[in-house]
Length: 284
Image 1 (tube, rainbow, N blue to C red):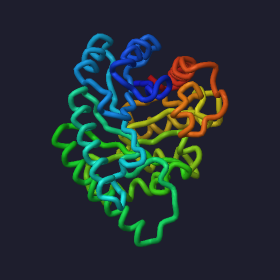
Image 2: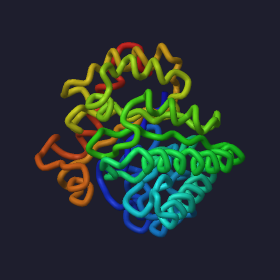
Image 3: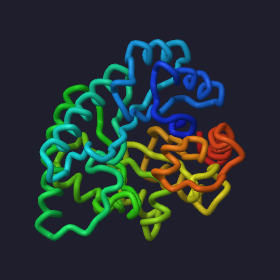
C-alpha cells in the first residue's frame, strides 16, 4: 500500500501559485503521495506541479471535486458538458502526473439531494451511465482508471452504498470503472463496512481512511483493524489516503458542516493518523 494525504486537510481551493509548499509538508510528515483536490483547473500549472513532484519524490493522485454546475447526470445539458470537460482535463492531468486514478463522486454533483420522480431519476441515471462510459474509454486509452465515491445521504441522493455503486459499474460496463470507498461515508450508510469492502472486491480502486467524526484516524468509532483485514482479504494493495476537513479551511468546513474543533490541528490529523494506521497489524 501507498499512503497519502489530501490537500483539503490544509487548503482550499488548491493553487500551484500558493500551495506547492504542501508537497514538502506531506513528504516531511512521512507520506508516499499527495492527493490534490482540484477544484479549479485554472488554478493549476501542471509544469509547476511536475517540478514539485520531482523535487519531493511524492506520488500524486488527482482528486476530483464536483460541485453545482459540474454534474454529469444533470438534466441540464450545460452542466453535463461542464462535467465532461472537467473529467477530460482530470484524466489528462492524471496521465501526465502519473496518477493511477481520477477519484471522487464522478456520477453527480455533491449537494444534490432531493426526491425526484421516477422518470427524472431514471433519466439522471442514464446520463451518468452514458457520460461515464464515454469518459472510461477516454481514460482507458490513457492508462488511467476512474474511481467513484459513494457519499452519505446528506451529500448525494444517487450513490450511497456499495450495492448501488456495483449497479452503476455493471450498467457502464467498463473494466476501467471502480469504487472509491471512504470509511466516513461507509460508517454512516453501510450496514457493515467490512462486508461492503469485501463485496467491492477487485472493483475497489481507491480508499480514503477517515474517522467517523472526520478527526484523527484511530480516535473514534471506525473498526480499523477489521477494515484493514478486509482490505487484505480482497487483495487491495492500492492507495490509502487520509482526508479530513477542519474549521480552519472555512469554505470546506461550511460545505461539510464542520462546526467544532475535531483535532488539535491540521498536521496532527495527518501525522497521528498515519502513525496509527501503520501501527495496525499487517499494515505496511
